[in-house]
Length: 463
Image (cartoon, rainbow, N blue to C red; front, side):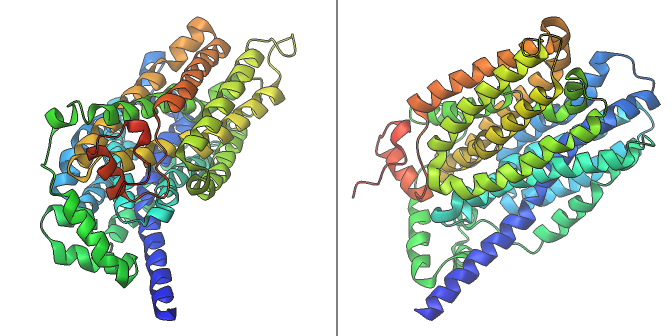
């Protein structure tokens, strides 16, 4: 018993190592999206950019590139494997960072951010899939949530770097620091194993067995391997199969979760944080922007701890309701309805911090977890790639329209618009979102093929 226990603990440690290294892609995701908040104005000043649309395009280039990466991620993860797709994303992060930090024109900045975005879109689909496929069911939610934690750390690191280089407006170093985690991701992934489920898909059963022996107790290995073998007996499919009557509801659930994640307006805070806090009346908005980033990291740690306790549905309820209230209050303050004489900076700050808290413990990580759990193994790559397109398509839409909406409707009213979508999220969670905590991926798949409704895919399997 002691030997089995020590082996199980060693497996858990190995999973932690895997999640720590591969989640560096999330750190780069957060860094490359957050660094623009501090780099935009000095960059625009350096290249004499006056157009609001050009500024929005510089910001949104990462999300546009990520949409391309998401579109290609299904084929990449299926053909190259999960591990080598992440290694490819590391190389793209390196190339994009060098292009952006050494740019001699706005066009080079946009091109570099498009390449970084492609890497973000590729890794944002593949890493949660990889983590889901190497994790024991009991901690799968928390392991996949580490990807979101890494994103928040990346955003925080970006804001710290921005504050360091803000005084001399050194936007090149703001971008250039990102080369370090990109190199760590590349060399770290070379030492990690491939997903055992992908290996079985490619008829590399012995390799899959060796990986499983490293991440779980010996007595559970053969049962897990047999379950994976059964799941690959279903026919391989593409987009036509994915959009068939049986699987279309899965696409709709994952797609809608990511649409709602972006329509929460979260990235307007992280892309345009200094702009928002300047509107709220703060004299040093760049430094104030460190507070939301700090809350984001701390709250995501809490999310990792509770996601396998409260479940996916429970966190979704808490998140949608909390964000709706905070967005309504923030909008009211920015519209001058709280103090009566314009925005009250403290009210706006507290509203934003609470909003970040509710997002970080719920909608920050839950869509990635649900996306990695719902789709059967033979359709997981194409299904998750399709869902990721919703993430980046709407991320691009929100980031490209925020300044325009704010100047047309007013910033406060724009946040009210985002609040309306959070109310819709509550309805969506009640009607459609399944509870999958603690279930093996193969059990969720068995329920799907048994004809259960999408909301009941996390029910115990009928023997």
